[in-house]
Length: 225
Image 1 (cartoon, rainbow, N blue to C red):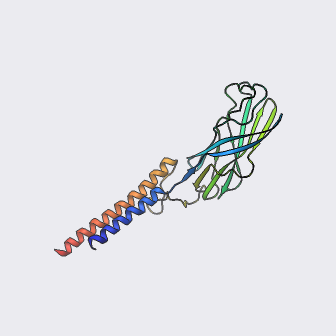
Image 2: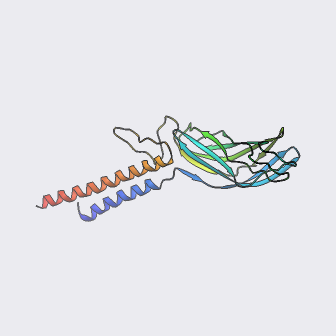
Image 3: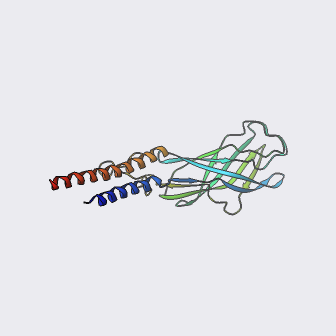
């Protein structure tokens, strides 16, 4: 094999590894959500940027939903622990249905007629399908002083998070796929492990390409002798 052909082989291995390393497993975007709220004192509306994050833990994901601005308000002060929030997150793409996320009651008093800031809400998502799954803000429910306020985003505000997931017990269709031995898989317990798996696979491609080029070089030198 000529020098130029050996260089092309090595360059191809490098390019293949770069593509594997660049393949995203998750995409997050802060989305402005226009909540239309039904409160005990009438209808209200508020826009809040919504951030949804997913962290892998074994075969599950911890999903965290964050509000960057307050929504709704109360005509009277809400004392510490008086307000209990929960919300739904609509699943799309490979999955369907909704995930419920909950959080702690307010840790400090909320003054009257002040936008209610919702603490981060969390829930556990277990993939039942393999593929890309979207997470979109759904209905927010606020319970306080024996009353219930529901805030619903009209239409579809768009997903705040997209995950490339694998169903529990299924085979991965994502880029983070690698073997150990005869058909084995590297253990993955979190985003960091996924990156390591990708790095290991990319490293294997690079080592194989470099070793192959070195072997061909030595073989050609031996033949010429």
